Image (tube, rainbow, N blue to C red):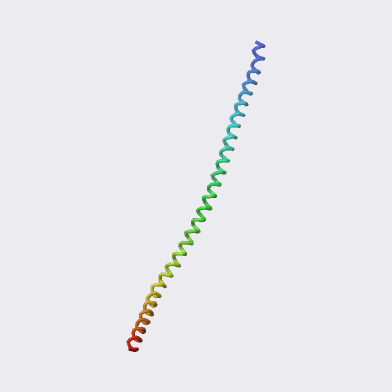
Length: 105
């Protein structure tokens, strides 16, 4: 009986040590997984930051294009009456030249 009593604590200590070793392995695995997830998260954040920068540049481009189209619309609005005025001036010059040609004969 005494031999049995001496062996029990050894088995319990061995079991405790085994459980602690398994717990340490689990903790190491969890820490590795957590480290890998943290690195992936950092990469995702960096990619999102780059994407944000690209989207900001595209937004600036489209805003500039919107302004350019407004200016082109203003130029077109001015060009229509200006073209009519130039055509009227050309017609007047042509009429004046024609009248000078008729009177000089």
